[in-house]
Image 1: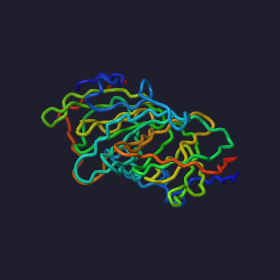
Image 2: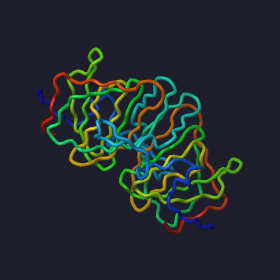
Image 3: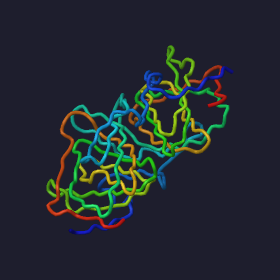
Image 4: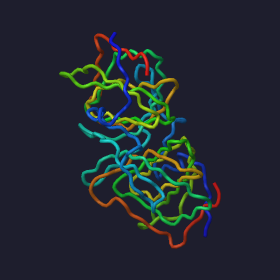
Length: 163
Length: 163
């Protein structure tokens, strides 16, 4: 199996796949008579298709032990999907460019516990990859009519051996 | 000044104002081949008016020392606004029923650090009320065209003396 290098999550490298949600270096301004700092509008939320609605859920992910095999990828053609960690636990983010309707070679990133990610609509990604311990994430994604899930299994899985 | 009692946040008492986001006793099911528990669709996200969009922001609230005077209330006629705490810090939630376009007597709640709230569109509420320490919240609210803010100052403020 081909091993994937894990990079630190970086706005420039991730921009083709989605958004990084973090306060560091983020646009912000004061509201509420100066009492509150607003780090404003950090994600492009895609709500496509018929009768879409935005949803807020919590995902509780069991940890993956290393090495992690990357076999199944998925994408949501009708909506974005944002994850923000609730216990400051770092996690893995694995995305891939589309190649003729299938995911290409994956890019693997380590997200710190102070970084959320938002996959844009139709971006191939691995399901939630918590590490070390069970981890909760606030998730903002799309509900509504239509088939919003596509899955693909790589013929030959990739592997993440270390983070 | 009239003192407000602070109640524990409770779904039945809060339902006329919005939603409580918490995993305890929440509808959930397994996804991702059993690896992840999804606590599903915990908030009604209102996106009204012209060209609305959903936004994800982070609010960093400075703590209010007690006693807290409740003078200014606000509401967002075109969209809901959800808050979820990121450091498990408890906070105050103050809402009020509408009385002919103005907020009535407020209801004050203590939210634990494992409870988020979602104010439905047009529900009177006090701006973010962190306690004890600076606290971050993931916020999901509405952007787009139109005036989405109304404010009201009580002639006689209320006071929260203890939590």
